[in-house]
Image (cartoon, rainbow, N blue to C red):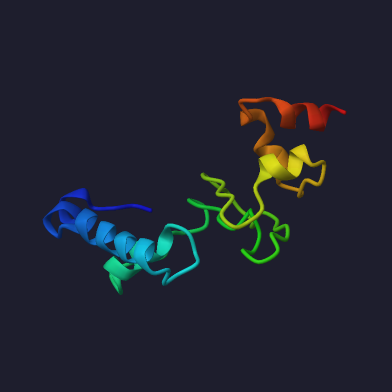
Length: 117
C-alpha cells in the first residue's frame, strides 16, 4: 500500500480506520483481516499496484490455503496474504512451491531445518 501521508493526515484517515475497527470489534461486519477498514474509508479512491511491486496471495485462498505460484516477471515484494503461511507449512513438512523463498528469514530456524532434511 502506497499512501500520500499529507493527504492521509488532512483527511483524518487514521481516525476513520480506527472507527471502522471499533465497529468490527463490537459487531463483526467483515472476515478479511485488516484490509476492509481501509477499503471502507478510501472507497473509490484506490488504484491497483502493479504485480512487480507486490506478489500477493502466496498464502493461497482464505478458505483452504491452496498453493499459488509466482506470477511471471520481476517481483519486489512477496506477500503471503491468505490462510496458508510458509512457516506453518514448512514446519509441518507440507510446503508450497514458493515457501522456500521465506525459509531463510525464519528467526527460529525450524523451517530451515525442514528444508535441509
